[in-house]
Length: 558
Image 1 (cartoon, rainbow, N blue to C red):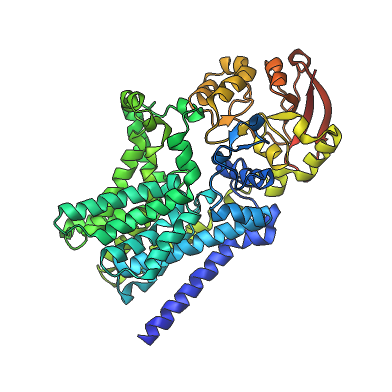
Image 2: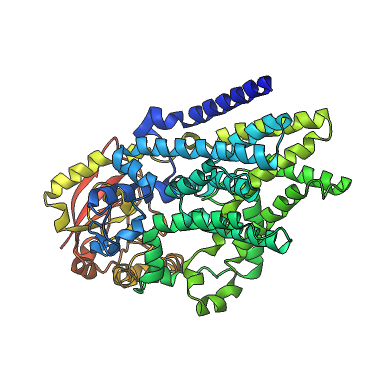
């Protein structure tokens, strides 16, 4: 037993060293590191800085953020002050906070999956390598950074709830249920996890296993903690009647066969917000194991594996068919079905896929020594493959954090304008408005989950003629509108125009009168505007810097 304990400790230390090596570029390179742009640099990282600077960290539920969309953006759009990630960015420089967040998430993900497998899914010392290897692979998945433990924390929560369900609950289990809501989001994962746990409890009841009130109480307890932590979201969703941009969100747009195609795509490749990198090695292992189970009629012995195999398929079906146009009559009747993204039950898939992977490897290992070696190689190959998905590798063609936010250059722009920032408003063309926001400018454009619908309609008048010329962008703005950008027909949905671009904006048609009426004085354009005078715009100066990914053409309204 002592030998096994030492072996386990050695494996855990090796796993933590691998995680440290994986994260090392973030701490070594810091602002010179390459990280995800989509739903990260273009939004969340700027939001944290804006919130800290706003003085509204603990603002009331009806408070607004003055820096964005003329003070019409609700403080609630930036989430709760009781989230640890908000405080990381308030207390530390951006990249230190980012690195600490990554480390915290991945370490908790590792131990959560390891304990879940060791105690409930794959018990036994003989499976130590598979337990540790699968948990490490799960912890290295390229999760959505600002999602925190919303998906990667699920195994830890399930471990605690299963302990309580089995009558083995200790104070540590309740501590887990208490602390996780402070580093996870209910709408980005745990609403779907907790409702799934509710169905699990109900299934136990229907199968004659009794009411198990401790299990039910634990589920309710964690739900209540989430609701207290996320009180701003609950308030906004349930108590504010003012129409917001999500009221025009239309998701039920896919015909049947496109939904089928999306099912297959999601099953094979996953989703950008819950990437699992499971196609190349995990799926072959699972398919081989399910074939063995089918051929040898091992359904009863491997019922958990079979259940997870089927559940994984069903989650992809649910995700894809949530966008099926057949839902439209129901969505029109029940408005909340359109404003809340119930497709996110597929956020359960990272936990399901990796737990299924571990059980598949067990099935393979039981077929003989050569199969056992093959199972271990699957783990090793998956870990090596995940290493290639390190941010520094997959985003190497994107701007570094320093080049993206271009603080030095935007400070030059601020000094050139030489006015207090709160006395004028700006908007951007060809770059994300998060860049201006991060640098302290007051913007008319933004990227946020929800904001007043009246503002969206008012802003639309600025770009109305451009939207009329490009159906794709018009649909994107009208049927969603989370990106309240100055879209142009020529650029479409391209808003990262680097400084080496030779393009010019031609035939631009903005309603500059509305822009000025809303307080707009300056436009930061990534490209020169050939017909600037026709748009009542005057080129003031061109800004460029070695440390910036952008060249900014500063235009002033006439």
